[in-house]
Length: 491
Image (cartoon, one colour):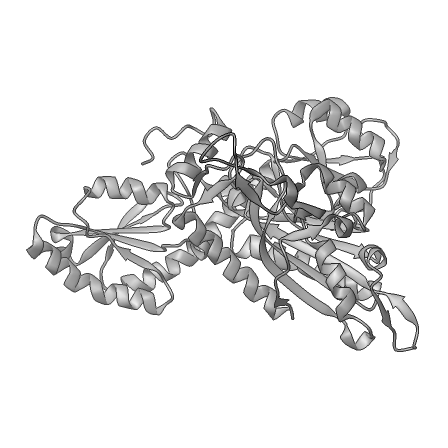
């Protein structure tokens, strides 16, 4: 129930953690740093998966699966990638346990079962996939390879928060191989556009598309593109990345192809991914002090109907009227729950479905039935109205579309209100404490970026694709700059 849910304005972090638990999305597990995604939370993730998977396949990609374990020698073949992930790797050193002779009933690692080579539990799959591509690619006729996999990965995190940062998480990772840099760059941009479309049209979260700075670039990539979203506390959240790998992994694993001209050349690569971190973005971008606010396109239940009755005779009469409406709603692809359980009173049910973010709630009692009306409540605005039963299914279908657009527009307005052009260091220091996206000039050096991070905990979220060329001075050093970048504190 939503009773006692912390207020966002008082403790945003506590509000988020409590909401994840009380809305039945996830809970901490017996494994430190890992979470259990509960059925309601997983059903939202499934809808995300389904939509993204369709979009991937529409752009020519197919799904495959690669091993969870990566031999250490393969992992360290691309030095920048290995170095970038080294501190987050879980490593398998033995392949067997045995009974502990000193502690009856307990187990110990069998020292005789040490692996000849350690296995890294994948933090990302470039190494195992590119070592496989070496066997698949000989000629330009074998290209492009457009593969995606849905998988879990492990990145050993010390400070965890459900969905946002856990030791194990779910994601998809695309890995493609191409005959030219132009083709690989086109792929990188195309998949960034796919992510942006998904975020805005399904999640109702507006995003900024841009390039990462060298400091924030994926280890082993020549260029990293990203989508950045703003949460309600003014912090940024990286919602997806698409990497142009150049020929780095092809050279590391000696993946070559014979070109049309008969020359032997290294392949060009990309990788791109989003994860269950999108669940965190969905929660933090839209929800309120009463609970979840879900955009209809990702809501497990679009409409809940709560009958208000005193006995079986009343319930039967209500059902007789409601069943054709449910059938019509389902014919439009709308998921409906008719909650006639007698375990809880209507008021409790209203609060529960509000907490879980069901977009539309309908309630009907005997007096409503006699008057030919039904109460319709919107989760996003918490408003309600009485509508004629006649034509209610079409009305609700249109209302769900309106809610989807309204949620997006509210988030977009919030971002606009919390985006600022900053021209001096004093302005920067003052505004960063309040949050938001700070559009600033930067001298382009990693040293300045690191110093700003050290002083304020703010990072360059991206160099926007649509940023305009303009002469200016770096907010910290005063050195010349030709364009603005976005600084923010981030999750």
